[in-house]
Structures are given as structure tokens and as C-alpha cells.
Image 1 (cartoon, rainbow, N blue to C red):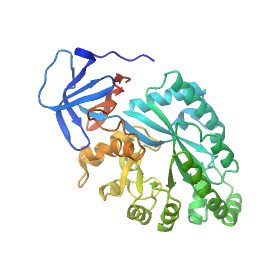
Image 2: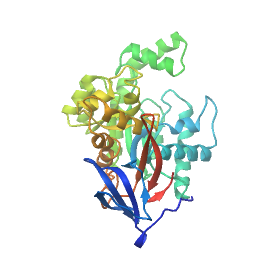
Image 3: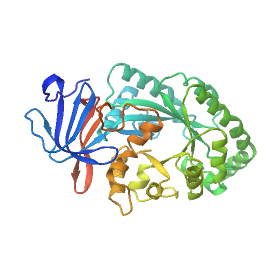
Image 4: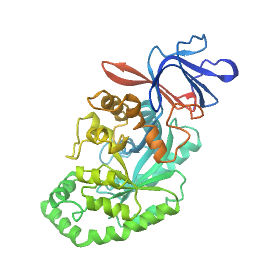
Length: 386
């Protein structure tokens, strides 16, 4: 992989001047200096240097950290029954990630079909392809694995155990869209979205779900949590809608909740000391496309502390700026922390997530176009990759 060379001063020092540097707590107007892939100084003031990169007042943000995106599926299967060549899909996906300012991404892959049979085919192909591309130095972003476990796939236990020794696995989510956990109407809606159009088939599946799924989930939840604990992998509940769901998760030692559906679940998770992850597209779109609680509202109330892109990588940057500009919203530094410092802290990525001395020089230069932030340039470990 080739990287653009940068102007350097003495001893390999690279300086960015005339920048609005977004730190974890505030915005510093001045100079950012890096050397050997790390930040060495953040200084306020006016600086001039022939060898410096003049940012012309643009923002410098820490590289964004996306803990959940299934955007990779859109590259692997761009149309129903169309399977793109794996290497091409991965490299195109990586380019989309880095161009969105994301320097660390958790690739969200389903273990189990979750109503989409193609997922069983692409899982081993993408895991192997990501590993090979990383080993060849072809990936611009750091790629970690987020395994989304379909609790009702018959091959779940076998397929999950085959992946748990991969050091890239850092995050597991328990997915349960069964009728016992949700309303019957919700279950019917999910089946239709997954392409089941025969109403008789849907009702048959609904009855089977009531008869069998609760027992299956009760068996698999603790098994997955224990397997994850053995590998020091973080586990989250997914799409909780009641306080009882949250209580069930806490009893198993689960500390994260992804995509709370209701205020009841979100507030219960906050009260239980859990980390709540919300979707950035929810913020950008002004609400949930599925009828769930507002992510922006959860952030403003101090309930959600991490935003993920879910399915649109560009939403991370847009959500941070939108929420910072809204009435009653956090400062820009606090909003950027939702997609950088906070996920770094929760997932033990202590070398990144903040523009501060000693941290990795993962940097995003952000400009403005018609009121919309856009990524101008990206550096990963001090190398310009976009």
C-alpha cells in the first residue's frame, strides 16, 4: 500500500498549523505535532513554518472508532443473489470506511443467517479475506471483528466456536427477534422484511417461536457469555425493549446495550450502569426508521455514550456535528467523544481515540460544504491514507 509523503521538519516531525483541534474536552486553535506515528504536542496559538501543513481553519479530529457497522455486507452482496469477489468487496469496503474518517472499525458479521441465508456463505469468506488483506498491508483502517449471534440458527454454537480464537474478535452481540421477546406484530413485521410473504408460513413460524425460542435463548445466552468471558470479549444485548430484558442481561454480566428500542429499556440500562450504544443514522435522520427511541434524545439525556454507524459509515461524522449544533446538545468535543474517546475507553483501545500527547496519530481533517462536514484527509498512525 502506498501512502502520500508529508512535509517533515527536523527529526521526522510533522506539524499541522492553523487548525481547530478537537481534543477530548475542548477545541484548541493552533498547532498539532506528530512524530513516529504518535501525537507529541497540541498547542494553542499562531504558528508559521514552511514545512507545516496549513489547515486553513479546518477541524482536526481523532480518527473515528466505529464499533458496529454491517456496511461490509453491501459490498459482499450488492444485490440479492449477487456475490461480489471477496477481495474486491473488502478493499472497496475499507476505502469507504477510511473516507468516512473511520480509522478503527469493528466489522459486524452475522454468525447465523438471521433471516438472510447469504450471511452463512459470506461469513467464513469475509473473515478469511479480512485476515489476508490485513496481513498483506492492504487495509487503510484497523479492522476488528464484531460477531452478531443469531440465537436461533442451528449451527450457531459450531460456527461461533470456530471464530473465537481469532484475536480480531473483540465484540459479540446477542440477537433475539423471537416472538416471546417481542410482540407478535413485531415478529410478523420482521418476517415480512426478511422476504417471507406467505401469511400462513408467517403464522406457523410465529407459533413455533412461542413454543421453542424462549427455551433456546435461555440455553444459549449464558453459553455465549461464558465463551466470550474466556476470551475477554465484550458482550452486548441487542434491541432491548423492556426493563426485564435489561435485568436478564445484567444477571449474566452483560455490560452493554445496543439500540434500545424504548425509553424503558434505555433508562433501565443507564440505571444499571450499562453502556448504551445508539445508531448515528438515527441522529442524522431525526429519528429511528423502525419506530424506536430517538438516539439524539438518548445522548442529550446522558443515556447513550457511544454512537455507531450501523449501516452508513458517513453517519458517524455527520451525527457528531449535527448533535453538537442542536439546541441543548453537547459541545463539539463531547459529541466527537461519542465516536472516538468513549468507544476507545469502553473497548480497551487505550492508544487511540484522543488527540493528546502519547496517543496514536489517527487524525481526520474535516472541512465544511454547505453546512455539512466532510472528510478532507485522513492519517492513520501518522501516515496519510486518504
